[in-house]
Image (cartoon, rainbow, N blue to C red; front, side):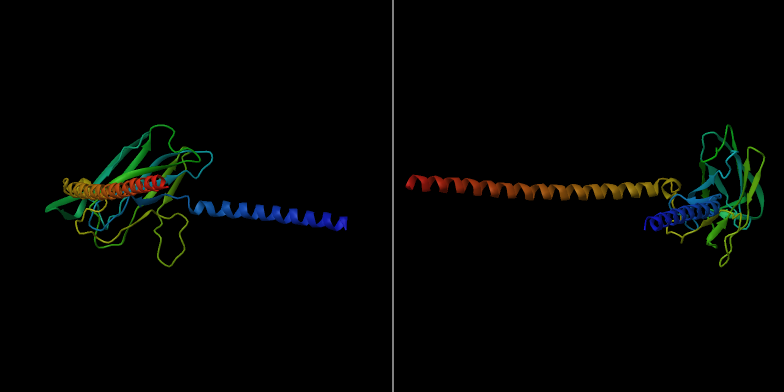
Length: 255
């Protein structure tokens, strides 16, 4: 019996160890699939509007830092306005080019658009085990497409270059080096998207402030009503207590 128990325990221990090794292998193999340059909007990126988007750059190497990022903008849907937000420790450079077909924005013709933004590290860059976000204010977003694909090139301190330039295709497996893809939502009525408060010359911000004021006013009214109801309830309870005290005193006197 004891021998059987020892064998069973050894078998169970080996099974647990094998499962742990297998699980580690799965995690190790699946991790790189998520560790690529990606782009996401802060809020929404509505067609025809403006948005702030973040390019998220993880460091995939254990022995080198990311020191440079180049993002190329789609030529078939040019963006006339691209403004980078300052990122500590990095210098941003915006490159513009002439357009074959000028754009019309707010009644004005635009003959050039941003074709590339390059971030270069002033110091160590993105060290192993870390990631960095590079925000951009972009607009106006196109209305005739559901997504924008950006090709990105990531450079490491050891001179290694990784090209995230393969555009994912519907119905197909994700490519080995997928390009960042920004999904666009349906157009809004004011065509200002997530950045409406900043790009509507204060109009959207004013509406928001009025709405907030109305909400605060409504909340204040509700609080006043509640206080009044509680006050009336308190008076009633107090009066009942006084009446009870008087009645009890009369009963004692009568006794």
